[in-house]
View 1 (tube, rainbow, N blue to C red):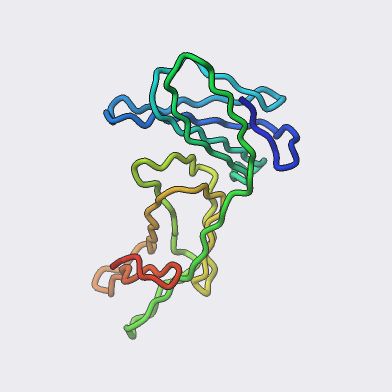
View 2: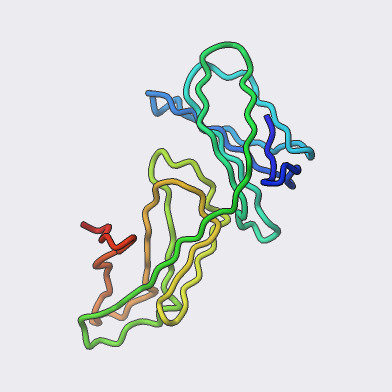
Length: 178
């Protein structure tokens, strides 16, 4: 197969992840390799079954600016040829809000916000970058599609002082904590 940029050109070094999606979780493994300089790739012999193929192109900082994926079903010994067209990675944005107490809130820029993939989500999040502003606005860049758990942690509390905890997460006008 091949990985191409939206204009059809060959991308720089592209990481590929192949995830088997079989009924026995213990047999579902992930293979990882890199495309050739011209964007082409081959895989070793694979057994029949359902797979997801994910391509990611990291930039110099390790962030994932481009990705592509395809679901593939292998049912015969004939090779399957796939062309993956890269598209920009996504950014999750939001805002931390602390309310309902007279206690002094922590410096919101020190809060760590992260995403963790849920089972069945094929992604390499080592390139995601989380930035939290002092206003509480945050962004997490370099995210590929999938199902994730959003996590926020407030650094070191003082014994005997109020503990801050998550009350709600609103996305698209819907509280995801319900």
